[in-house]
Every structure is written in C-alpha cells, then in structure tokens.
Length: 273
Image (cartoon, rainbow, N blue to C red):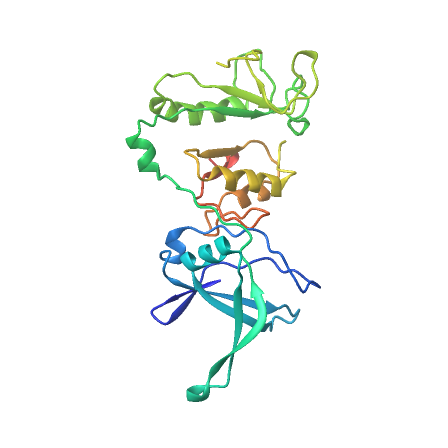
C-alpha cells in the first residue's frame, strides 16, 4: 500500500507473500492516521505476482481513500483492480475483473504519553528476576543467584540496586512489586510468574527462546503506558535480546504484521556498565 502525496508515492506497508493461491487472504494491516495522512488522502493498493528473482509482476492496482475503503467494507463490495497500459498521452487504465475486498475494519484511539500524564499518571516500578537453570546452582558461589553469607551482593542484586536507586524517586508509594520466573517455589510446580515474598495476593528464561511470541507481546503492549528495561546478567549471548531493543530504527513487528506504535524496550548488558 502506498500513499500519494503531491504526486509522489510513499510506501505505507507491505503484506506477507501468499503463494499458489488465486484468492489470497492477507493478515490484518495496522496503520495510524499519521501514516496515511488522513482518511480522505488517496491510497493506492497494488497487487503483485511474486517472483523469486525480485522482479515482481504488477497484477493490478486500485486507488481509494481510507474513507472510501470503509464504505466498501460497509457495502460488502470490492474495489475493482485496474492495470495501467501504454505510456505518455496514449496511456489509459485497463479495468480488470479482479477485486480487492476489505474483510474487516476497526478504529481505535491511541493515547499519547502526555494524555496519560494529564490524567494523573504515576510511575510504578516493578521487577522480574530470572531464576532459570542458566544461572547455575544457587547453592554454589559461581551461580548468579548465590547468596553470599558475608553479605556481598550478587550480580542480580547489584543490577536491581543500580536501576532501583534511580527509579525509586519517581514511584510515589515506594512499594516495588517483585516477581520471579523459571523456578519451583515452595515445593510447587515450575512457575513463570511468582511473588518473591511468597504471597499469592500481594508482593513487596535466561536468553529468549520464544522470540516471536515475545515480539507479539511487546507490539501489543506498545500502546500501553509501559516501558521495559532488560538488564542482561551474566556471560550469555544476548543477541536476541538486542533484537527486542529497536534502537537501530526498525520497530518490532508482530507475526500478524502489526508494527509497534513505539519502542518500549531498552536492553543493557550489565557487564558493559
């Protein structure tokens, strides 16, 4: 999908490739009004036949504004594709029999950070600690979770103090909910979310192995007043963690094609700081 802007085309989004299907159904596309420039701005939807050499063949295109697409959806009608032919003054559009249908449309308001602040937003500092086996045996001194009898803090405790001493001043109630994941608390089954104080009501895996599911959750959370600071503790390979941190410019994309509305993740290897 491209947006026409002063006779220039600006790419808005691309769908996934569907092979060997003459009636493809693409995954939902998520856009914001800023991307399309307004509901009445003309959009061009182009359909291509995929070629492995990268030279894709244009099957046809349709030009509609977002408002017109919504009307087509309400009426159950499709947008008729056309194919430009010829060139110069002799150019014209060949109307095709193929159509593009809008199966579903929904619209929602995305609040800005300033909206939350004006509504009385307060910061709430929360901590989650990795207890998976990658940390080593907690009874041995070389474990990242070892509790030293002398009182010397382990690496996790150091990381929490370094971050917490800064963020505590922005948390009004000075109560910091703390959870653990990847352990067997109090002779129970392995849990991936348990309160560190042992309470089931109130509270005072290593590297990512389910990367796409994590991306999906982060993209879904990008509309919420939530920021996530991941502190990599130990000597593990944190390349996949760095993928979650969109500092290089490309925002996370979910398996449904939705792009995160903002970057909410910051990853820091503790050994570097």
